[in-house]
Image (cartoon, rainbow, N blue to C red; front, side):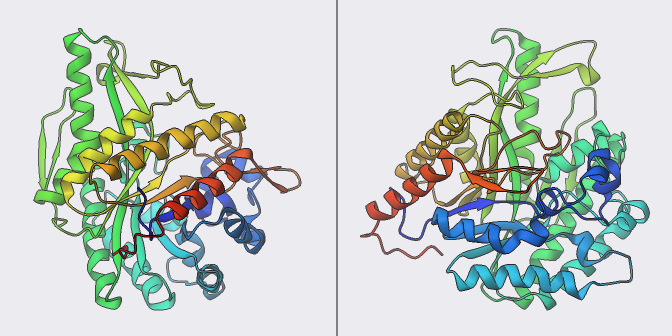
Length: 421
């Protein structure tokens, strides 16, 4: 069922592979002070990119680390720009389509201290960075402006577990509005410079269920979680109005200039969350994972729930733009569990394609084991294992299986010559 030009790829984040001495996260997590190079990808990137040929992928999603490009407010690092340009050149020389993420959670330290997202000045600072990238780096058609803005802001502005470490609902709303304004500005900047550009965000979506099926409070929390976490940003791209509703908070509607500013929709999916009313928790909400399907839990304790991917794909299809699964993966040390996770979720993608949903690509997270936010180096997402002492990369069974699936899909779609875009 897969089209001839379906994008088969893997996804990575620059900071999670290579670190950066200039990023806010480097001083946020003590682990990074002890192991700042993480996987040593900044030096080993050429060898790591060869792994893409082993897999047989035709596309690669990576991010550009803003803090390396602009280590100080008024300084641009030409050597860092050349580094990311070399990555792009290598990909293109090997027939691999680059998809660049401009913002993947991390910031230059000077930015988060002087111009955090709840400040209006953040918009101009980010625009300066994007203009520099578009003017300096060539060969990219596909851009993702922001990776998982809701995760970034829930962690940074409500839970306080991510930089800038704020716990304030009003600041959360301001920051979200400013990021969406930035996306709109970036969409215009990129399209003004690159005629055939394809621009999106990557939005993390989850399946939700009430802890007790017949508890009205659990069901209400589940409904509110779906509306906020999955629906609100999709509705905002469709209508230009962002509607936010939280327990014990007054509903908010904000006009944002993003209506129609989406060439495809980047969808990240990992798991299902069970919502439970708990009067002793913040906003009375308790989030839990349960092994309902019998597929088990990941090493992070997340439920494996392939059916949820179908539900969020159907929801995203309301936007009437192509969908690309920009992240899907599992943290586990078990090769067989990783293989089974991949197989079940790709089967869901194929099922959705058979129903006529316009899905253009699937990107497995991640190419190699990496640093995981708030979890350190123990969350083994990679198709290739990393020995964090020697930096040796070893293929998993799932890597070989992914390569097999890609070849199988290509063989079955040779007759379909429909172009991707």
